[in-house]
Image (cartoon, rainbow, N blue to C red; front, side, top):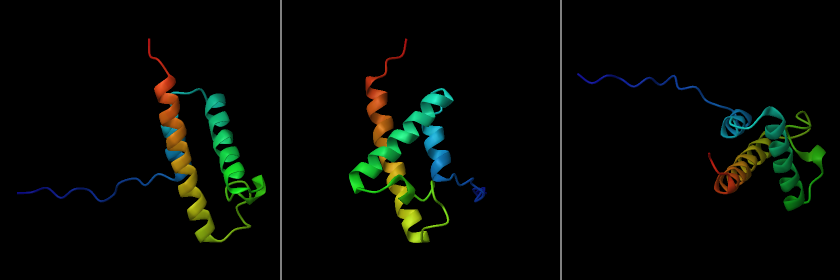
Length: 90
């Protein structure tokens, strides 16, 4: 007999995924990385910091929030991979 796989997988939010990605950093470094990601997004898209949905959550439409959250995760993954290449483990 086959066992049914559980469909109750926990779904992580974008922020939880980013925090998990950088979990080996101390909280202050993790916060700096998140601020760097926000800065990259603002510079790349020529936005103000207030235009980001996690800074000003009640101002934006759902589609904008989804798009920006996915973009933040992509930029976070790029940052993670670049830091992982330069980091050495002793």
